[in-house]
Length: 173
Length: 180
Image (tube, rainbow over all chains, first blue to last red; front, side):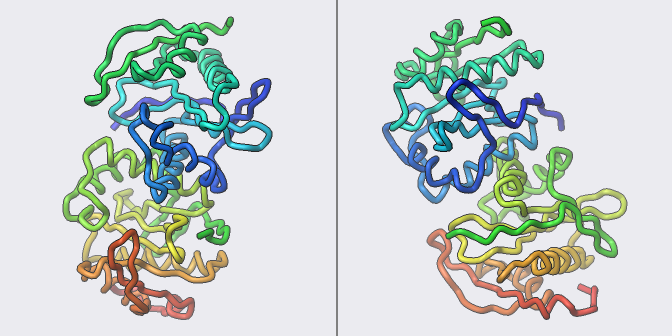
């Protein structure tokens, strides 16, 4: 079988953040996000604590299968979120996805991380990236706006109504 | 529960098989394996396509998080005999030696050969203990564990369900016989 692959660097740095590969000891901090029903209400709901490590392994494994994936986003050595290129097998295309831990929201981390990922992808020849955002997820919609994405329209993502935001893939931002 | 760091070799050779760290090129074969109703019965399957892809991602990601994990065991002509390896999620009391055999490969002793090789490599790499957590109804799996020298040590609850704990002793892996 064939599936899309796209090579991204294993690490990225921004002004304030380090985007790195997942490590065992990220699990405890990641659980703070994934088990939070409110924080996860636009991302498929809270994950039971015993499934957090498995999810981390799945995110890490996408890097092996596709050459790209979600990064662990760190600030001063502390996990503040997850962001990167997300592509389960039944996704229509590679998605630029981002989520910040509740305690670290409101500091522009999502915009900073997602922008760097988009630019790194563009520099490597990527011409198409989309973000699928719940219509009620206003903070995420604002991030997409700040990134200069264009609202492309409504989309049914396996029964979940979302809005597709098309990113501008120029290396000049 | 934190497991000790254990770095395993990326490839292991046995008389009839090559065991290689699972990777991108194994995806099609692994998805076929985990979509098979019989095979996936005790693994929470059978899995649809997208779920099976996610299982393959998990198998690859385990290596990235732990430095050890699952091998694709292939015969000399490249056919997948099965998936054998170490499973060490935080919830597991001990490091688990797990094995999933391709339907076409059953009855040839490949599983015994592969499981023994991974067990030896794990103890050589410093594994303090090695077990298999086997569904009480999975008779073939228990038989295989016994053939490789494991003993039924206990029955515990894992993720809320009873499993038989088969414990491997390093000495049991030095047995010379290769027959199933």
